[in-house]
Length: 138
Image 1 (tube, rainbow, N blue to C red):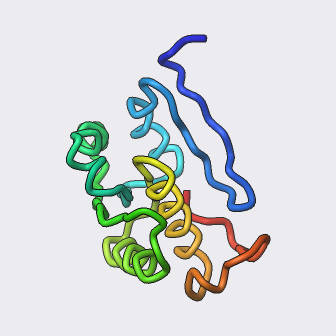
Image 2 (tube, rainbow, N blue to C red):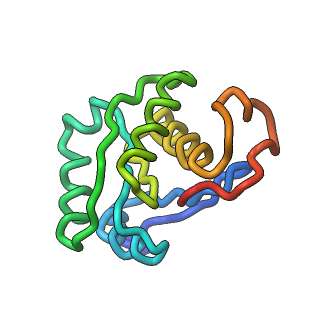
């Protein structure tokens, strides 16, 4: 396998694409553009941001004239209040694509934000399976 190819899988029951592997971030601007995105909402946690990983990824977005907003307040097992705060941030910045960077909590928070961007209510309305009716932002 070419280690620069990265890998992709779709996480169900919420339809989101997860891209991972060495070199995957190099293709992020192309992927954002393919979704019609001109601005990305980057969801991460303080530790990942302080490591420099987020700066590397957002520099790639900037090189391709893709604006972004960073939400870096994710905590372990982010609660509904934090998710609502992130959704408010997404809506106020006008991003059309959600990018999660980090581990499980950051990715789960990004998926919840993307789902709530296109579905009404609070995160608690979607506890359980098959409750998300509208396709989340990608």
